[in-house]
Length: 448
Image 1 (tube, rainbow, N blue to C red):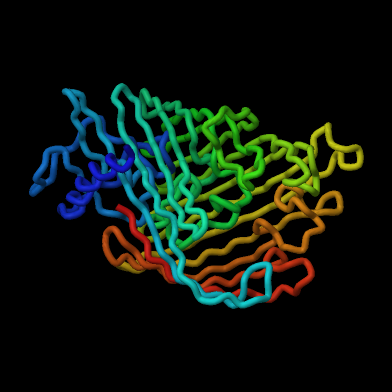
Image 2 (cartoon, rainbow, N blue to C red):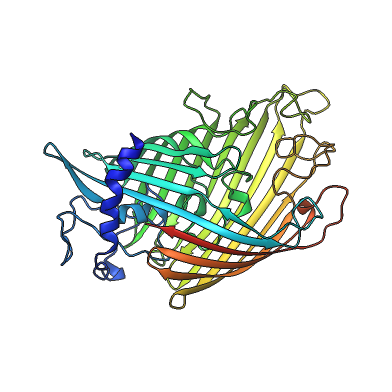
């Protein structure tokens, strides 16, 4: 069924690529206040389809021209087309993203051995969005990853949304946690983000934060001035799940316990239509795990508190994002007497700066992560076995700098060249020294 849907929708997207670019945007002064309910930087889709451009061969066809300041949801909304079934009308879009990389490094993290230069196939991502009439819409996103021994396909998002006005929405399903800007702007579409990879703090697999939730999400938007808005978001559901024997905490189709609440306050469009800043936070309970999963702290749940502050200006030609996070893990009252009151704190921040010059966008990014040791051993959630010599499963105590450039070779394709310098305790085994790691990466990505 999925294959037939793919074959039906892809030809219409291919036709849209050959159409002429859209007409120039309205002046900045006429832009409405940024609305909530999709992603930062997105706007409310028009209630009626715009007239087709001159030269379009089919009624209802829409064309887009990829822009440096587009987030993933805005990209999808801009490419929606009309579908008529038995007299009923809807609008839909199928977007595809993918990348391939070549990388060479002076050594591997957690080891002194020098890795061989290698190619890698990135994530192939499919995003399907549709308006279902009566202020209802849906979003489905899934990714396919190449692994030599076990190819992996995952359902990343599945959301149903009710949005009766541009000032309120309610949705339910599996969605990206509304932390900061990056996590809800780019999702899995690497083509739209400026760097080859997401910051370490918010990696989708292997990061420090619960970047996905399954549950309900609601938000409201209060207009401020001519173009500004105060956006407030609240969520409840499951943020951390038992890892079990699979080794990872992916959401399944079974019912999951509600163990997290989340909130975000954001000011958008006050000084410029693309400027945003705000705070977000979460409180959740990390479930207990048996000894074979968490030997450093078996059969004990962990309380988790997360705080975040961010500033984002994803504009053209100037581009800037900065986010900071603080994570605290504490043991609940059912912990063993010798561990009650133990705390582990991890702080991290990253900043990305870029400037577009024609088809080139040079950029720099810096990131810092530091974790404190509590109860004489590392955080048992991030580092389950304190006596293991196998290194850190996640990036703790790392300092990293990146210099690179994005080259837009077409409206739908880009090449990124990066040099990365990494240091810190988190890059080594406990019994080894900490030399700096030099990494060079070439990435070729697309988005349609």
